[in-house]
Image (cartoon, rainbow, N blue to C red; front, side):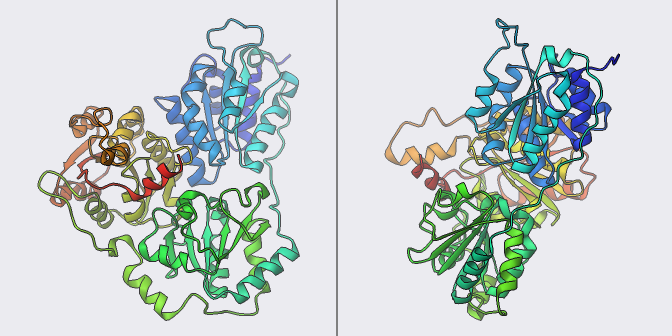
Length: 546
């Protein structure tokens, strides 16, 4: 008779399916399944908070292209992780959350909450390991749902089921899928549109990040300009016809060109208010197309003239083959010159508001962009500051930018950078945070230091929840609830064992240059005292949507 338990079998099954890196906080309920994962080859990263574990796993999945895996204790372990799970679920991140659960008979357990309802409430899939006979099938089903359907799955593991003895069973191979191809009629219709378009623009989202080269080739054939949603920033980095991000972060030139488009094709992008500035970036006469594997996405956020159900890469290949030859269309000499001269945010003139005590947040971002190595991965927290790193810091490709903003929670930046760093060894990890988000997620500063990650952590510190200051302040509302006394975040960072520097002027960035040239064996935290008089036009869009 086997001396192995269901917990052992579940851990082995997931490891064999491909769970290579697991984040979590271990308690009594998930102790054995976590050890089983490790025993079968997975690396376990112990975070300091379950919310950090879920967010790091989300970021790891985004950058690596592999499913994220999280392991948590029953009840409170799951509730602690819920914000990170909500972000992943809303972003359709493939992720499996192994959540211990009180036994069905333990009705009065202090750990008992409705874990199914918690998962469903944030858009995740809830599943369960039912018993010894089905343990392999249950774990495999959760993995397949995550990978094939791009869903975040909470796999509940009742304690009595985990402890039951189980016989080893053959683990089926990791799932492979064939993405759907657009119909011939849809390909013909899209090719017809592009043949007649004079000013076509492609907007690629996270659903098209595996189709970058194919979309770039189709754009070259059809004469289209290229843009992305914020989540797919960097997909067309280096292309001379790249407009960068469409939406609140778009440069004035990019916004002008997108507004003038006669055909706008969204590839794996849902055209939310963020990407279209509440629709104002797309002209009223433009023909709007969405290409997506999920037909429920069609027209969910913006009017639509044509919906094409199919994989972005395969559809782009088919449409390119249906076109007769290369056209100039929107790729004129005049547009090329405009993009060369004012295609980046740093090319847009601004009045520097810095002085001897505070640095302009744009000056800070430009100074950092000049200092950082090209091979970088940048994770951006949420808040009034978030446009500065998103707009002024360049990235080498879409693997170099992590934008966990689907739930619009602050405090996810440090954990996002942790997951991104582990997914991209060899690149400099950069966490871009506001002071509120940095302090909210500071538990993972200990994790980053303990793992020896040479991470740069930049805090745009205005001693406030700046979004609320700029939203409510002009109307004369009292702001005492959203402003704070000055905090020496550099001292706090040193207390965690990190290197730290306080930046008030561009000259104060010199120690950053020295750290970059050194061994980078400890994280460096920049407490940047930024001017606080700059409202964020991108968050004005957010408040319009509340």
